[in-house]
Length: 114
Ligand code: SF4
Ligand code: SF4
Image (cartoon, rainbow, N blue to C red; front, side):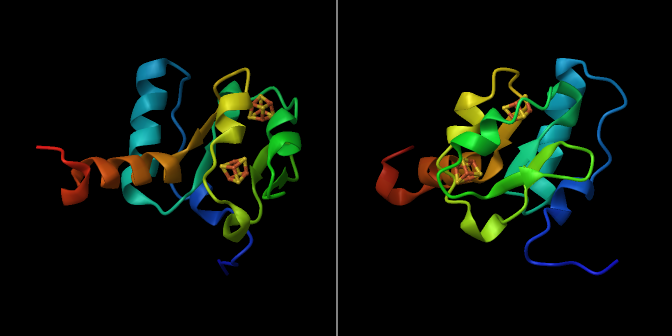
């Protein structure tokens, strides 16, 4: 399949969990974090399509897909500010890029972490 810069292709590269238990979803999020370059993950099993995340994004990086779910339509615009994650009432958004940045900061020599 042809990949484009603007499609959130990495979100579909790992099979979503078969059930919506927190443990299974956490495993899925961890795989997305470790094995993809996906910046923002919308977990569709918990999303009710309220579109708050799309409205709040200051960079207009999110859009609805063909099924009406939000997704990161323009990854190059995303600055990992976290607004979409903080705003979602259903905890269906995870800004993976923010977590990667935090992890890098925690282990960098300048951080003072042991
Ligand atoms: S992290 Fe910020 S810039 Fe990126 S999609 Fe979410 S609200 Fe938009
Ligand atoms: S704010 Fe949450 S529930 Fe609403 S559309 Fe976005 S991901 Fe779905």
